[in-house]
Each structure stands twice: as C-alpha cells, then as structure tokens.
Length: 219
Image (tube, rainbow, N blue to C red; front, side, top):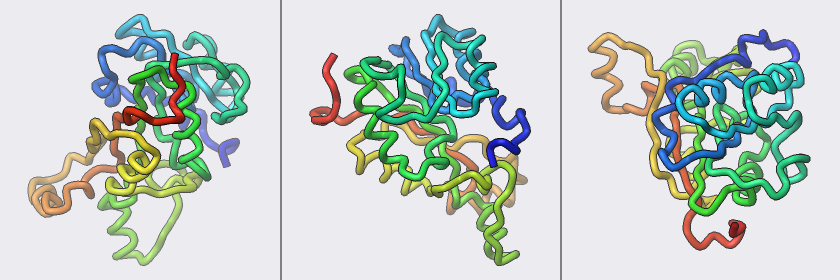
C-alpha cells in the first residue's frame, strides 16, 4: 500500500507541531521522517541535530540531504544505528497508528531518551465528526487514501485512548491538544462544543517518562 502512495504523502512539513517542542531540546529523532521536511523546517528555527528513521527508501534518500543522519528501516530495538544513541526528543508524527504494537515503540523510546527527554506525537482521532457522520449516515467504515481513515492505519484512537496508551506505558502526558480542526460555521461549532474532541482530526501530545521508570537508561 505504501508503494502505491503519491510522493506528496511523504512530504508534509507539519508547521503546526513547532509550538509543542520544548525549549530545552537540542537532539531530535524523527521516527517516520518521510522526506525530511519536518526536520528541515525545524532546522530553520534552531540549530537542532536531527536524525530520522524511515522505512520508505525513496523518501529516506531524499531526507538524507536535509537531516543530520537518516536510518532506512523500521523503528525497533534492533534498528542498526540507534544502539547507544540518546535524544532529547523522539517524534512520532502520524506514526503510532501505522504500527501493529505502538506499545513496543514507546518501550524502545525509553532506551534512547535522555533523562527528562520527551516524546512528541501526532495521532489521528477516530471520533472526528466527519468519521462519525459517515458511520451514522452511510453506515460504512470506509478506508481512504489519506486522513483519519487512511488505508494503512492499523490502530485507531480517541483522545481518551491516546492518553491511556502513554500513561499505561509509564509516560506522563504534559500536553494534549486538538490540531487541524475545520473552520466550521458558528452553529456547527456550537453543536460540537458539547463534544469538543470531535472537532479535531488529530491530537498533538507532548509526553515525558515518569520519574523512577526502571526501563529508562541513565546517561
């Protein structure tokens, strides 16, 4: 399925995530870095050292010209090149929903995060009102080429289950905020105000490891 994606699918810059990056971050790992546009944008803001991990070879080759180092492959404990590395921030920008076991990715992140390091994640919201309308009106769970119902998504999350994913894996959720909401007419916005999470196709989360986690490696 990924091989059939238009290359524009791998080119999103994600400007809206800049505000979630803490000021004390210097070394970043972008998991699923695609063609490297997010990291390249960050480098225009600060002299970050940014590594990427990307399984799509064509996108990874493009990212190599933009980032400090790019590892072609999947993100796991066996990923060559990550052993012994430590980062201030690990980013999962629309990545965790593509994994069979996102818990494994969060567990491995503990090994490569510096003490007091962070995770930034952007995750699609299955309670987005357009998805719910499709279920109610069309009685259909229909996959799409992109978006919340992307055909390559293996896991689905609500705001509540996003928080649970991190908390049950011993992370503290510092911030969770809806992003990329539709510019709705006032009456639709009013109706959704009672279920405000439904306005957002995605949520951005900034998390850090809870103190005392035994799997966190000292540095």
